[in-house]
Image 1 (spheres, rainbow, N blue to C red):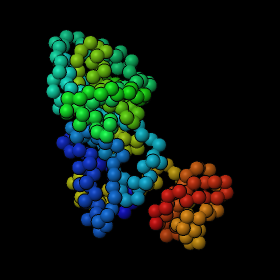
Image 2: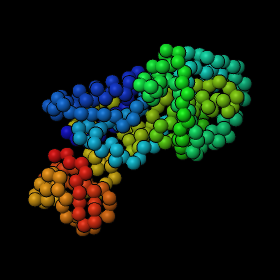
Image 3: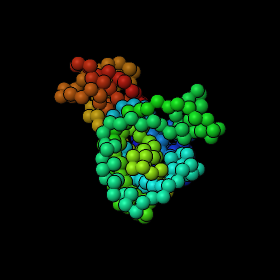
Image 4: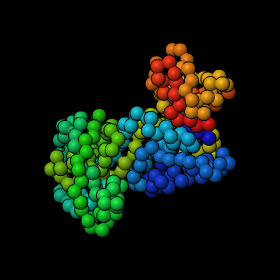
Length: 291
């Protein structure tokens, strides 16, 4: 069993818990008690939406995925700041919200589009001195964090839901903290603010409209599996019996004519996915061998 799963993670589950449940389903379906699985990017427990999962030796393809862009929809709650910058945190500041506060939002949102610097929140999974930042935060410890460059590709106001809640949509680079972005937006309009609800609508080529629930995956695990070629944009070459045996053994083989890509998926005559090769002139070198 090898490929990817586009899971719709419900709010309330950690990404690790979600992967464990999917792994258990797939191990039973495949009969392989050691079948590995891993997600392609953590989604906060309180958030819902797309959680891509690599299954089997597809976990070795994760570094080859170039498209790491993310898309989210969230609510921005003005007038209240929390220590976690989201709805589960402790309130640390409040301020009355003027009736016209949202009028400034379109211009403020536009000011965040592009490459910006963002300081990761204390309540995050980043490491410092051998501990996760959130572990230090729970102990009341605050440490200096270096700002990181992120990219906001687009940021749109979807509407104002109530006196102090607006809904926004964000397309951004990997490593963007949406709750920190909400807090920063509030600062720029002169109000404490935090992120309310959060839904990840896309993660690279995985989109919300195609995501499957845990129940759907359990009902038909094989149908839920996405072939690597549908996710990683490499061409495929088919080797004959002798060449595929050499490739499996780690030896370079002649490169079929007409292949201009750097990396290719390699299949044998039975169309079994053998691995990933790298083109070196007129030769094809094994880089990841699956079978």
